[in-house]
Image (tube, rainbow, N blue to C red; front, side, top):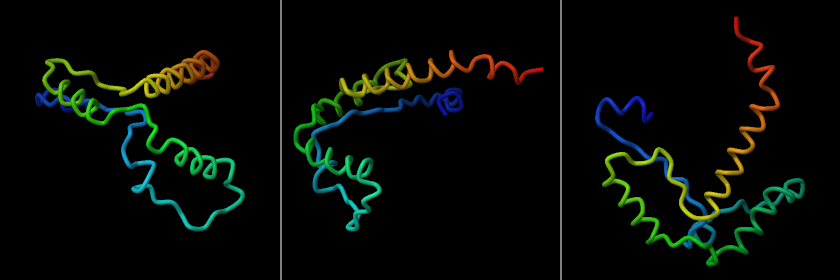
Length: 114
C-alpha cells in the first residue's frame, strides 16, 4: 500500500507493537466460555499467558503514543515501526525464519522460472 499511495503524497507506517500495559490482556479480553481440552496446549496456554502478563507488560502506552505521533512529523517515516523490546525480538525471529526458508528452499524456488 505504501508504494501505491506514495505518488499521492500519502505516507504510511505499520505499527507493530509488543505488549503494552493496557487492558488488552485484562477486562477487554473476551474469551469463550466453553473450554475444549484438545486446545489446552494452544488456546489454553494463551489464556494462562494473558492472566500472567496482565498489568505487567513492559510497554508504556503513553510513550508509544508519543513515538507514533513523532514519526508523523518525519519526512521519511519508517514503513514498519516495532514498538518495544519484545516487538523487536519477535520481528528478528520472523526475519530469521524467512531467511532460513529462502536459504533452504532456494533451489525449488528458482526452479519454476523459464
